[in-house]
Image (cartoon, rainbow, N blue to C red; front, side, top):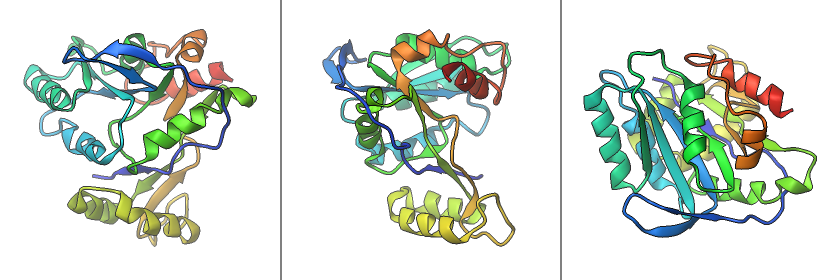
Length: 239
């Protein structure tokens, strides 16, 4: 049961952000700067809510969270929907349980429903420090001043021992100093001697960009099924 921790957004520069309005699930109108798209498919004994609950520690002001459920069984889908409603997150259910899980399909569905100028293609099992999303927005606001059109977020895969400690404390922030120190001294590609870092990914499938850029690149190709492949294909087209 290994967990991942995001280090934060890669350095970049950008223009002024123009947020769009959307009506959330309780009928209010608010400003959103970033739409965070989180694909899931639950299975017996694993509904992702234990991982997503860590986001309660994050500053989500002006952040729209969209959980896209790609074919979870009905009873688990109801659990995820209730979890999202309690947090005023948007929940989108795709009735695709008879098909193989598709990250590409789920991410495209979230993109179509997003309200902000900026979108972040996320994973459900990532743990973020409390200020991550606000720092990501700040980086995206500088993006148009650079020759780049997207950001990829580095991630640390934690060992089972460290994952157990993080799960016990129900937050990641107090562990960050030790994780960052471990990155200097432990093998980033993995070693049986590593205590904290299973391995380090300086670039990952956690991608942030403008909504317009995602559409211009054609979104994710739904020929890809399961995990893997769809993110590399998308990045190649973004480049």
